[in-house]
Amino acid sequence: EKAIHVINSPEGNRNAVAEHALGMLLALYNKLIFAHHELKQSVWDRESFRGQELAGQTVGIIGIGNNGSAFAKKLKSMEVKVLGFDKYRTDFEEELNHINHVTLEQLVEDSDVISLHIPLNPETKHLVDEDFIDKCRDGVVLINTSRGGIVKTDRVLSALSSGKIRGACLDVFENEKPQTYSEEEELIYQQLFKCSNVVLSPHVAGWTKESLKRIAEVILAKYDRIFRS
Image (cartoon, rainbow, N blue to C red; front, side, top):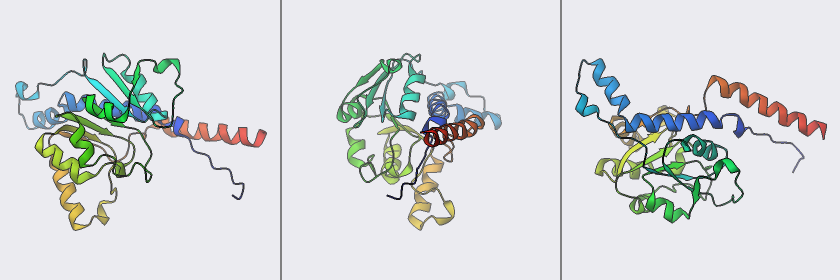
């Protein structure tokens, strides 16, 4: 309203987010975190560390913007079937021709892995709730590298405990300030952090040395275009 230009740079860290999401997924499938900690305790139990291959799985991506597109490109050579849903985008580049575009309902029902790449707003808040989870395949894996508020944490925790969700890769959380946890949140997060079927990181999916530089370059390039026009 005041003619102030607002610039963001999602292009700058989309590759970092995509690599992080794929890394978390592979770590979960291959039980790398579990094996790492057990082996450091001199536990050499190969059968317990037997993993699962990603090839042959169906991966659903909700949101085919900068981050969702980058993640889909990483999956192109992974021998998986990629399903995609984006409510607001219909035009896709040739590099994304391996995505099977489906409804949200189809994606939820048919995916072995569901990865979230959408913004947090009134439309998406608590998208992943009890009803969403109930419609998923038994043993689905959930990835969230977008915003924590999209996921209802207590429902995901219950599904992790029951096995409805086989595993979760979570880089973002509803409350990312542990010092402000309510008693209820403290209990929920303590239980979540103890789960052996999760891979967790503190909102660092787009947090690389390369992305720090690339974000600055993107902002400067956009700034330059604005003031040259």
